Length: 95
Image 1: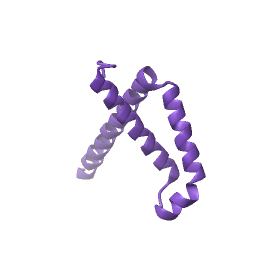
Image 2 (image 1 turned 180 degrees about the horizontal axis):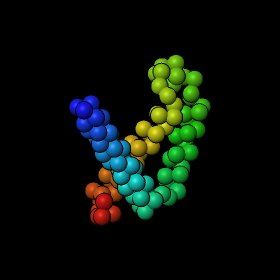
Image 3 (image 1 turned 60 degrees about the vertical axis):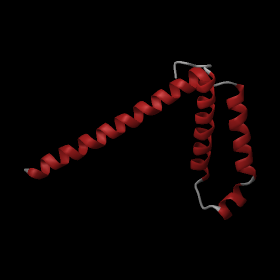
Image 4 (image 1 turned 135 degrees about the horizontal axis):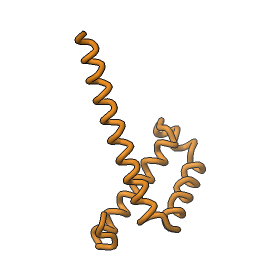
């Protein structure tokens, strides 16, 4: 009987964590769509993708990392820095 409670607790914890992750992703996507999705973001993504594709062999030889994960992390860094700058300048005070 105690294993049933253990399983329920684990499932609840996993459910709360997944719900939190989904909420954060939804809030991030909403913020991106409302405040940051413009030509500067598109140019940044295209330039980053072009550099990664051009230097894929060299990047892989130096750092054994998944290139898609690297693209996502670079974009999150770009987006975070841009949001921080916009927030500090008061461009989007509802952040």
